Image 1 (tube, helix red, strand yellow):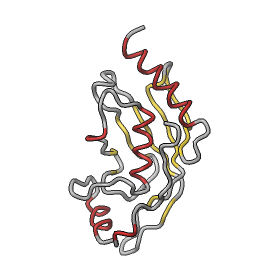
Image 2: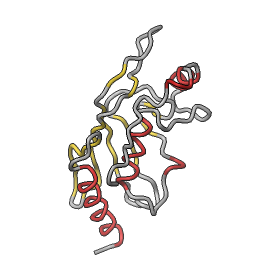
Image 3: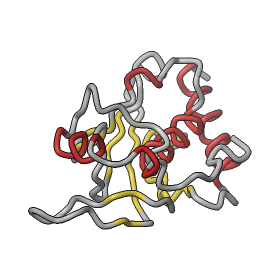
Length: 156
């Protein structure tokens, strides 16, 4: 078995173990044998894109797709939201995971990091993908964030 296939197999086992009974994160589906694509559901509080001139509403169910490219894990996974959210480091086509990925990091840990981003435990307004969300977050009182204080790491 190639190094890549061993890594994909290990990641799949890790994802199953970490999220089978996780209270806030679950694997909806996976594609491939071993999987190279995942659909993950996050049950965390996160703002939704607001209507013009309105404040964002808070949603509690969000989905993201994670695709592992051919040169994974040297190159990071491609991550995008399937459901809309209002976050400085997430746009409709991409979740910015740049500084949070290294080849030695587990895929399950990356998924937890996305959950932390969604509930604003982790965000960066200085280098936004979504300028409107960054401006909104910058105008909130410091006590606004995080939107959910739970330890999302659990058994990961």
